[in-house]
Figure 1 (cartoon, rainbow, N blue to C red):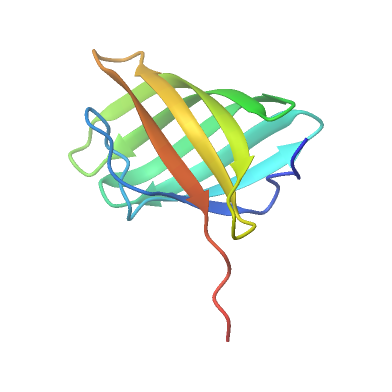
Figure 2 (figure 1 turned 135 degrees about the vertical axis):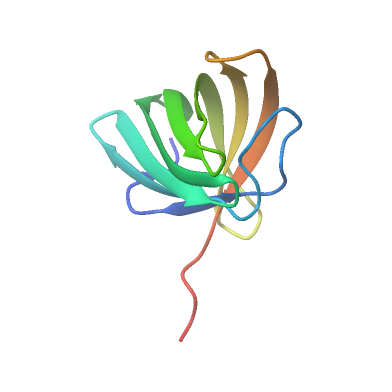
Amino acid sequence: MLPSLDGLVFAPTARAEHGEVGTATSFAYREEDGRVWASYRGGAIVHGHLVGTRTGDTLDFRYVHLNHDGDTSSGHCVSTLSRLTDGRLRLDESWRWESRPGAGTSTVEEVLPSAH
């Protein structure tokens, strides 16, 4: 099993078709005892939250967010965790809106802290 997501930051590699999260969105993950949650914002997203579980290297969670148009949206996502060749972590996601039609896939990758 790959390491904990606790305290890590992830960002999408691209904006998915039918999605609202894009490369300017940042996800701050927490993890404890098989539970995962994150806050996200940036780009089209004002505030977003996800909450779910982790079994091995698979995450299963629900998400909800508010966009800059004042619309709220929610959905379900299953993600598979892997390690990139440079050592960072990656999540390959399969998601489906529950609040409106649409589904897709996306990828988020770990963002390393800036060197000072």
